Length: 250
Image (cartoon, rainbow, N blue to C red; front, top):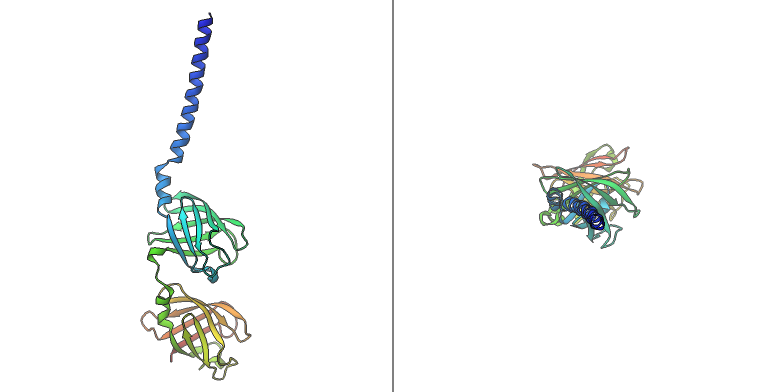
């Protein structure tokens, strides 16, 4: 009778042990899911921000390792190197990812990443306000700003727009800054920085801060002609006179 009892206890112990091993095996197989590993693999490495609706963060670099994206170069942003910009990255299949984004207020927000076949990451942060739309490219495929900005260098004269008194103003572009060298009949003065922080989105489109007649800066965009690179069109992100402009090389 005692032998039978011990035998039954042994059977129960072995059954319990089998359940534990099976559970561990299931967990391990989930952690090592080849599909999940492969999906995260495509976004590993160094990325640089080239666009979005908050220009000061353009130029920032993030290094993705496993499911974390850490800032490797804060550039002109308010972040610091080593900050975890993206955390808890999870694949949602077909190049789509969910994760948490570190905002300028140092809070994390639910966000999504869309990985494009052109090796581009497009980010959407689930909150309103500046910085909730972003575009990143792999650093190995990044073209330096100096290459894109070369087409803007030199003198430009304003020839049209919806505020005539500013026509004939001449601006000299050096690097990423446009300075007034001839104010014509406008209210600007020689040396005023009319365009600052010019940033190339691609070879033909740029973002910048535009100096208005009220001496305030407004977010604006420039588009240079794909065929005629001597024509520059500006759209200022505010209503009112002067938000549409046309410039030609002087």
